Length: 356
Image (tube, rainbow, N blue to C red; front, side):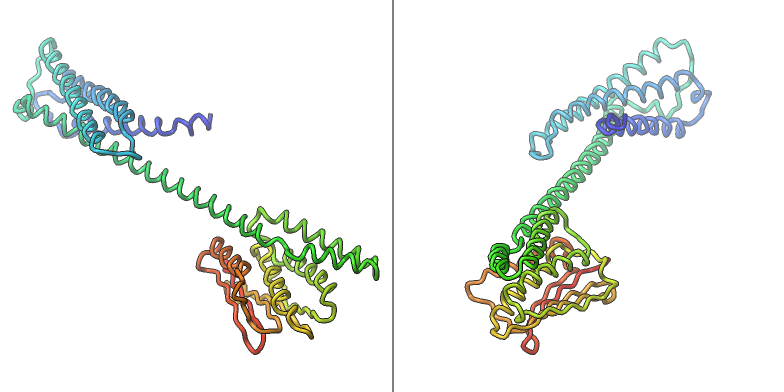
């Protein structure tokens, strides 16, 4: 039942407004007609009101049927405009012809003798024609206004849906780009580790499989808790230490109150990965990666600081940095920010995400 109503809602709206509109017009005619010599209480007057209501419904319904066939807002041109005026003219003639014919018929054959108010005696055929045209024109203007408003609203909803679909497609593409690049290196490192420590190798394989599962299962969502992301960062660091050993030191300073906050998946891991790849790996003595997260007012501030200098190679695509910026823009607009700078021989990457 609900699907039927939803499918035919515009027909329901039209007939509701149609009946109320012509009913209101008839009521206004009744209210402003002077009650002189019993005219307002006569059957002739009521017949006239009923005929106005029915003829109005008929003529404008025929006009609506015509307009639905000729109107095309996506390719509106002067020919359509001409057809609209032709339709208005024909509908006005139908309205006038039926109204005049009914009035003439009732007046001629009615046995009721009623004195018509003087104000109606001056209504000649020309004035009745003009009145019919104005009435139908007013109805058409209202009808067209509703159709245009409905079309604009439909276009707005369609654009919003397309933008949402495009935004999701862009996000999925970006998330696809950040699946961990170190997987093959990690497998090779674990293979070498198996000769030294089988238990540790098994543990590292478990962490690697967790990261693979994480990158796949989180690819279709746009937000996870900070706590979940930190677990994957810990796995990444553990795997990276197979290669870097004591050259890589990792420090976390996380405000416990921020663990439940939602952030884009894999965004911190990407920062840590960049810090490892472009910072620690270039230092013979290694260095430290420090991760902090805190809430300041209505903003979650995440920082990844690594030992080293900010150096971007000329042939670098800066894909990781662009990735972060684009995802933040798509998800939060201008409310979120990403900044990368060098401070006291340390590279500082800062992400700020709005919490409201």
